[in-house]
Figure (cartoon, rainbow, N blue to C red):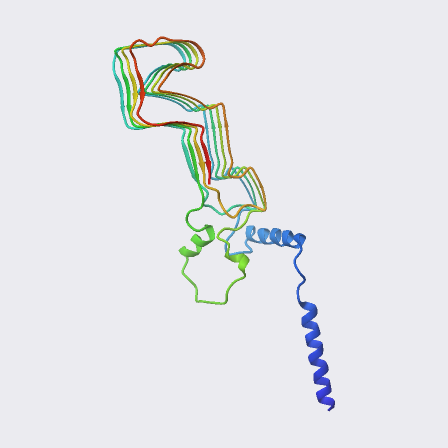
Length: 298
C-alpha cells in the first residue's frame, strides 16, 4: 500500500508540473518580441535562410532627365530645325521605362526596395515640336512611327514564383521526410518588421508629345504638308503594381504610386509652353490609344 500511495503522489506531481509548464496565451507584446528575435536570428545566421537586417534602395531603379526624340523634328535645346525630308521609324520608341520584380527576401527593416524613381523623362515621338527655345519648320516632311511610343512607364511585379524560401528550397537536394515544422516556418517569404516605400513608383514631370505638332517650351512650330502618324499606342507615365506578400508588420507607402505633372500631347496641335503652332495641311493621326498617368494596383 505504501508503494502504491507514493506512486500516486509522484504521478500527481508530474501532472501538476506539466500543467504549470503549459504556455499562456500569447500577448501582442510577446508576438512582437518573438518576431523581432526571430528576425535578428535570421539576419545573423540563426536560420538556414539568412535575411538582411537593413536594406535601402536594393533592386531599385532611378533615372533623371532621360530625353528621347524619335522619328521627329525637334528643338530640344536652343536653336532651329528646318526639315524637308521624311522621318520614318519602324519599331517602338521607348524611353525611361522600368520593370522590376519583388522576388528577393525582404529585409527586417527596409526602405525603397524594388522601387522606381523617374525624374524629367521627356519624349517626342512622330512629331514636330519645340521642347526648348527656338523654331521647328517642316516642309513636305512627314513624321511616321510604325510602333508604340512609350515614355516613363513602370511595371512592378509581385512574387510570381512562390516566394524566396520556396525557391531556395527547390534548388537544394530534398532531405528525407521528417516531422512537420512549426507553421510559422512555412511562410513563402520571411516577413519584414518595418518597410517604407518598397515596391513603389515615383514619377516627376513625365512629358510626351506623340503624333503631334506642339510647343512644349518657348517658340514656334510650323508643319507644312507634313503629316504626323503613329501606328501604335502613346503611353506616358502609366504604372502597374502587383502587391507583394507577406506585408511588413509596419508598412508605410509600400506598393504605392506618386505621379507629378504628367502631361501628354497625343494626335494634336498644342502649345503647352509659350509660342505658336501653325499647322498647314498636316494631319495628326494616332492609330492606337493615348494613355497618360494611369495607375493600376492589384
